[in-house]
Image 1 (cartoon, one colour):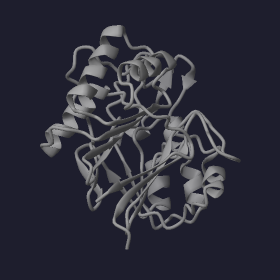
Image 2 (tube, one colour):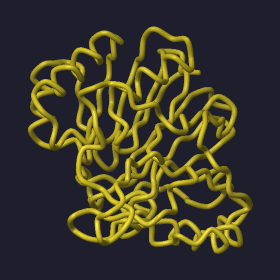
Image 3 (cartoon, rainbow, N blue to C red):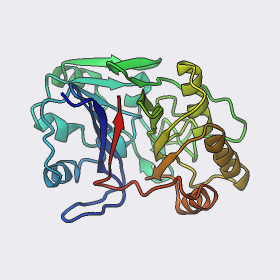
Length: 276
């Protein structure tokens, strides 16, 4: 049996490759020699199509993991269920099913009923703290908000009247220790990239991180926050940086300029293989 971690992007805003489609969202398939994990599901419009184009079967998943409860991550849950995944465990933060709103309106999961999900999945596993998904692959749970420059990256609420602020405590990241070093797969990093990486290194006792990929939600970030993020990535000696989705064009340009040679395009069809 092959000994590696294989990460493939099934959903992202951009696509490169014949027949592949982009949408505002993210979904990763992470495979080891013995397990298959779907980390996020996108909006649900292109997940199945892209999987088919890439020759990937969405059946027989060991776990589905939600980074947080926004529509661009949880929207594809029904697509997953259509693929006969009732024997799959669903890992999500307790706050992921709460109502969620932005200035544009309702942005929460299309399924917010816990009882419905309990009937559809083998088990709901609540991830408010560090949780092992399968052997060697973890999700952070609630990430402490410590760094003074970091916030959720926008205005979010728990109600349509915008009375109750949503601090997006459900935001979490996935990580594993590969032969090359720590690999971190971000959701939208509403907890902040710096907070997230600091917390993962505290959890693991590691001083370096090999790869970081995913949405960084720096679209509204100040220059000081961008600079602090770059310094953190340098301090952790991150060699591969695949910022995408909600990172923002200005932030992407900033990262690519200051971290030349470390950044790479991270679109639908991108594939990474790490040793175990």
